[in-house]
Image 1: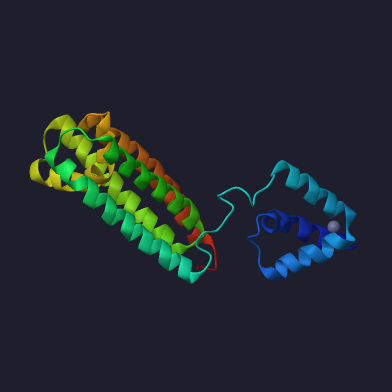
Image 2: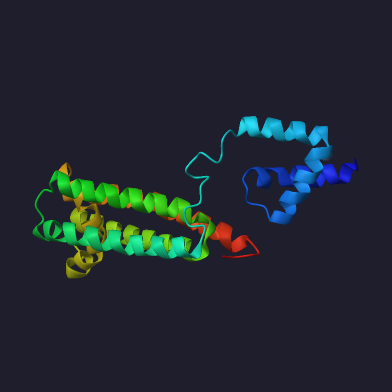
Length: 208
Ligand SMILES: [Zn+2]
């Protein structure tokens, strides 16, 4: 076996094991592995270091087909709509939230967490997650500013609304200031993750 081919296959192995290389590359790797004990041993070692990537929910791809991506966008709109219907009244009145609001907030956070991780291979979906996380962060920061300084007036209140409604469930246990602080921290983490995925996708020559 030519050693040059081993080097190529060993470069491709991580992509092959993550199932993110092209079918042509996968075929090349498989053909080589059938003949080369050294590379087979390396694959075995890599698999042990990185076990069961397929069973990990990050390793699955919920959005693989166009129809599923359309469904994901529909679900996103439904989750947003549902969350705003259920939480807006409470947030508007401003009192403490009930356990039901908390459940809505939790479902909202879980949905967007899952959506963002699963969206990481798709430019459009990642862009949606990125812009929504940016909006949420700016909104939560404006809310926090508003609570801490009592300044900003109507504009700050308006800016705070897009985070006040989805995060309102946290008012089950927290006051407004703490709620905005938690919302700002969570959305900043979200923003970093989505931003990093977006840059990664941009640096790839081929987009979806
Ligand atoms: Zn080899």
